[in-house]
Length: 489
Image: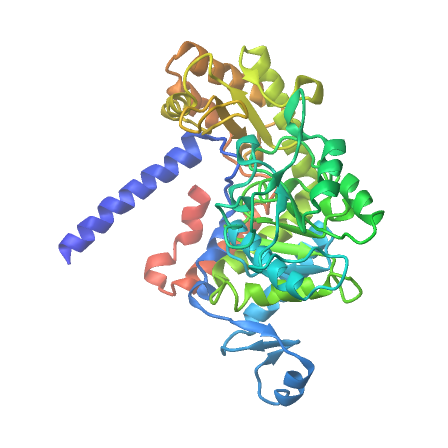
């Protein structure tokens, strides 16, 4: 037992050290990450985290047969007892997230953005196999003939590639979006429409992991509306930009996307999960596709849909709905200010100067004049600036990347404004261009940004958090002083 205790103590010390480094001393600039609030984290470890709540939509005959069996909640058949809270949470989450993204339908059971995409791909094959005229037919092997998407080398998301989640659902090579000649981070809308008309893919997937500019959804939607005998499904993978969708970036459902998928922990500051949304209500010609998505979510892809993070997702969505406008506006403004400051300090920034380099949370650097992207990213990490290396469109291989990809959303939550990125850009340039050690300067500068914003106040959090924590671990000897300890933190 002493050996076990010692091992746990050693591991615990490393965890504490990592927490203090990442949360107190580092500028966290990886665009696919964020820090949830204390309440969101406590929800993740609350009682639902160890529970099951499998459920599916009951057909009319099932509802009639099971009306007195005690297993119906709304129109859902639940296969486990003790799930009243989960039903309430999931229904409220659908309403809250639907309000956020202006969607009538929300499927919240996928546990990652990759799973959300695969659920859609599975559902597409089922739907197209039974679809009426107007939708492209499946091949003889019951797969989609092709799909249009963003090429991986040009920032396309891995999950929408034939060697990613599309692996079992597309027959041949995908058709990639054509790009603007002087800005390979933007789709050439006119040429895209020509390719769509030529190849007529059943599924068009917008969205990227290197995401700097809006996607031309409206132009494709207009083409589809005016083309007889052809109806693709327009999908928008919002994994990286979920938290800035709306008036400050773009509004995919309003612009004509049929489906929006994504993860909930990047610009959207929730737990690590996935989500699928649409406006495929009962009047929609794509209603059967939505029903296939529901059944592919369960039982098609999940059994336990991670109920602790489901509860946390609801809390984060309530936060987002309250602070959405302020947060989104600041994120986009910070990114553009950061990009401009980096250029002024001698670092090349991708995305096109005429376009302000970025309209999202991301800033992409070209560092090949100063070293390999992997080496630069490692050098920055040693100086307490955490980024990730990135292959750029003209790189021959991912093994020797020319770029660094960064995002400002997490540090925006910790209070940074446009002018604060000026000093960070000077330090970052000193490390990249001159290879100077600035780690202690970075840690001192980060100490000025410790208070999380766009969330419940610390005082209000302290009125709730100890109650949740002590209800999870009901031992007054251990946790009677938890509230006081939190105040010290």
